[in-house]
Length: 348
Image (cartoon, rainbow, N blue to C red; front, top):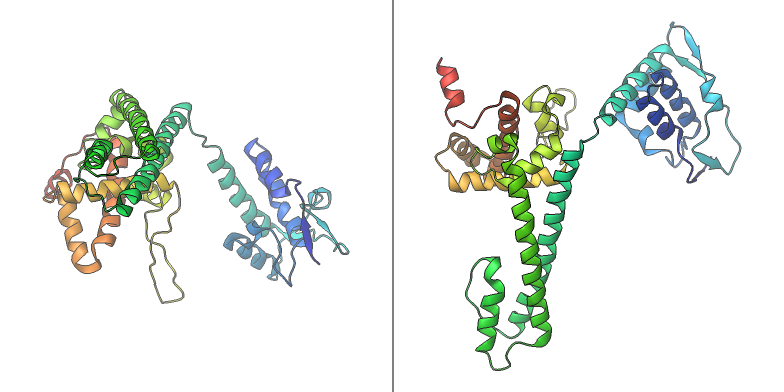
């Protein structure tokens, strides 16, 4: 049997939406029966969701001998197919043990709960503001690289400095060069100046928004955490009550080590890089800033011990994970950062 998927919505998608609207989860679990009829055992051309470990465990439960009552599923016969078949249709499997439906119902109930945590309007605005600024910076970086490539072709040397003064330094150096500054390079420099002005306005807007938010002010008390990091973190978390602990936040941001273990063998891998990449990137930059600007901070001293054993890059990611937990705790407890706060509590 070979599948030719169409643009019609799959039963999993339709039923997941109905679960978010309050439909019984058991109806969502019935979709697994329909997905079993679409499985291609030869080529593995079946929906990606059905390849997840949770679905595999559910199929194992169904194949085991059981004495539980069997649920006759009429929904499996009435569900629309998520693909059109080019060969004959197999009979749908409707005899499914109750344990199978119980597991599937739990999975889809959790998925519906996660889907219900929609970001607020303020969180979306913060995310959009940070995203627009990052795009402006990316455009400026591309133009700067273009100008630098032109200077290398002429072996034109100019003093080093920050990006905001790049155009002035290049113009001054080009005037001393015999060919002078070409018109097409002047257009690029003018574009860099215009984009730099827009970046300055974006920074001013973010600073004003962070100054009006007491949560961002408390988060910015941590060394290395600035306006961008605090705004990204607050926009991603949105509601601190969603997470029961700091470890849940670290896992949500994709900063916890992965694991590839089997039986008695335990093997830890790198971070899975799940969750919002922009928050993970800003936390990593904050970790570098913390280690460089505050080497005597307890977090920096703790990272120095890790660096001796695992290297500076793994130590910096560990600091980023630590910062995520510290920011969560400050937000949850309405506190400001105190370096020796944990040490005093341990002594007490």
